[in-house]
Each structure stands twice: as C-alpha cells, then as structure tokens.
Length: 85
Ligand code: HEM
Image 1 (cartoon, rainbow, N blue to C red):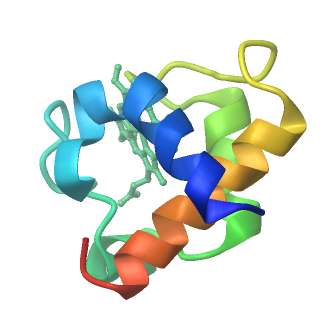
Image 2: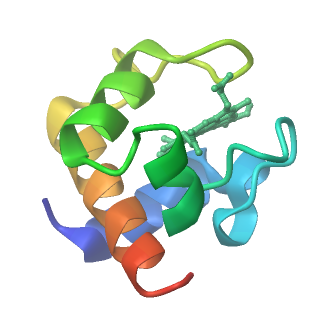
Image 3: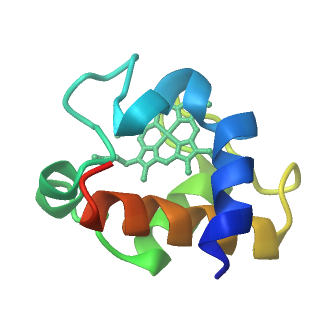
C-alpha cells in the first residue's frame, strides 16, 4: 500500500474519530502501537478487515472506499503506529 495516498484518505475518512491516532468514541481503542497489539489489530490484514466491515460504532468503508484505498489507509495507520503518530 501507498502510505502517502493513505494519509489523504485518513484525513478525509478517519480523522473525525481518530485524530492523531486517538479514538474519540472508544478511548482505549486507539491506533497507537500498544493498543493495536493489545486488540490484535497490528497487521495489514486485521486493519483492512475492520475498515471494510466496520465494528460496533465504527462504520464499514467497504463500498465507500476501494480495496486499493483501504489497503493504502491501513498501510498509513501501521506506519504511523510504528513512528508514534
Ligand atoms: C477502531 C481504523 C474510521 C470509530 C479502529 C481500529 C482501527 C481503526 C485500526 C482498531 C483500534 C484498536 O483496536 O485499538 C480506522 C480507519 C478509518 C476509521 C483506517 C477510516 C477509514 C472511523 C470512524 C469512526 C471510527 C469515522 C467513527 C465514526 C471507531 C471505533 C472503534 C474503532 C468506535 C472501536 C471499535 C470496537 O472495537 O468496538 N478504527 N477507523 N473509526 N474505530 Fe475506526
């Protein structure tokens, strides 16, 4: 995935709830490395799956974003987690 493109997708679709890797709805479920590890979301596959299908208060993006866009935004999230947002 392309993290540079993913960054723009994140700003447009994710930042409302996840600004700076936070989570404004469910405070423990951030996009930081420790939380992704704790909730078994520290993989491209895991993030892609949740973004496609959604989970609880997080909306599904399958159909709104292409598979390529979802892969790019997941790549960006993992890169940011690695770099500490
Ligand atoms: C959880 C990514 C958009 C609300 C998560 C997690 C990821 C993620 C990776 C798992 C975090 C963890 O378990 O520590 C994204 C991406 C988005 C996006 C890449 C854009 C494409 C949104 C939006 C909202 C939202 C717009 C609010 C309307 C939530 C909530 C959770 C969550 C509530 C916790 C779900 C649960 O486990 O019950 N998100 N998110 N997300 N996100 Fe998003």
